[in-house]
Amino acid sequence: MSAGHSNTLEVFTTSLLPPGGVSQLFYSMIYSVVLFFGTTLSVTSLAEETREPEKSVTRALITTTVIAGFTLVLVSYAFTVGWGPRDMSSFATSPDPGLILFREHGVLLYALLIAVTVNSFMGYNIAVSNSNSRVYYTFARDGILFLPPRSLARVHSRYGSPPHVSATFVLVASLVVALAFGLAFGPAEGGLLMLYANGYCAYLEHIVAPSASQSWPGSAGSSVWCSTYCSRR
Image 1 (cartoon, rainbow, N blue to C red):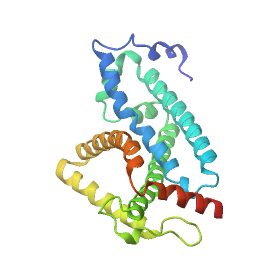
Image 2: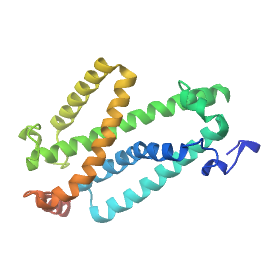
Image 3: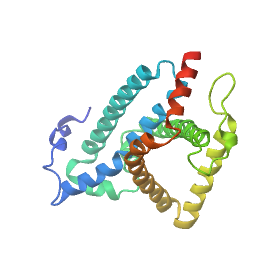
Image 4: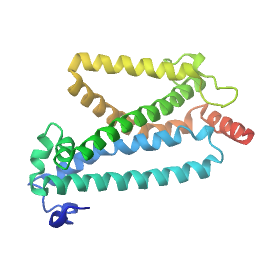
């Protein structure tokens, strides 16, 4: 990190936290874990379409967690030492600290940040659409929820992936929810509210799903279908 004398390991300790900051740190961890939920879901939702899923999914989960964790720590460290470890209170209230920091270091970095941000949003949307379409396909196939129609429980004859109707359903549902929250609470507050709701729902999912999957009558269907399909590939 090219920060000269500003580089310090003190940012990895609690010495710079204000009074009561340790509890706030743990509160922030509740929502930061949501970042990893998206990473793991994008991998596990494609297990049924993967050759040797036991090995491939395990390897992918470990690799993505290590890469994502390293990237998040590196970027967070760069922002902290670049802004100033003792001035992070203004970092939190700044409208867009990332753009401010990069703009101060040159037009090239500023343009690069915008390009990477746009690419990240596009990649994120593609990954979420892929994973959500598989989730809704599974709901329809196993009859878990009343919402998805049975027509979603189809796979492509050649690729074994859910057809376009699943992706269309996810797109329409996401658009309706986003517009509803945006119109009701405003773009910023609506987005934050959906993020918080996503975090709590994700925790609830990880608490309920393991126990529910053991007692659900059709829970074995996924494993059987996966074994049949993967062996065929």
